[in-house]
Image (cartoon, rainbow, N blue to C red):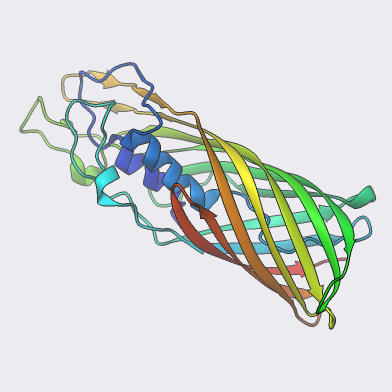
Length: 288
């Protein structure tokens, strides 16, 4: 699996030149900012399940998968951080997956976490962690729903990915010293997809207890950082660092079906109206 944050990197800086600045702070309407925000959507650590008020110390493990959308070609050119820019193929994988664990705590609290260890995945070395803390309050049922609940949730993602993103092996050239990727060794770039945010989610259970439905909205602060690591044939190393600070509103909605033997399947539509809409699917098992 190549995780989708790598997709951002390929499009952002595949056009490295020796004259690149040491630091670049593109504006919120730049192609760099738009592309970073676009590919932050698939890895945002959303709830992915209807809120339920449960007793303490339940443990639930799950596996999440989601498709990786394709960016508009118009934003696949660097617009501010490099003087020369070639269109990049930013969508390097079609699916993103990660494990998740949830532990309920006293007083309606719950803690969630996800971790991708530092092992090589293709040409990349990811080391990523996501986490969340939520509080769920029960609400009287209404209509066809026997019970309902409201959840306030704080979430975040930290870590980094290193790999040959700006100048992969297939992009290297030795004919034009002034052109991009003039060298014989792939780049070793670093991407830090830092983000954190808040979500409010309303959930309701069917009278049979087999189906849950949920909908909500959130606000996220995106702090992605990307550092180029490419040395050309002249021995000049480009360490350009791209820094972007963004804020985004999101909307989500979905359903959970509870199966026998403590299994459940959840699906979710997750949308950041300014960037892209995607969907997620998760299978879970309640250990206790």
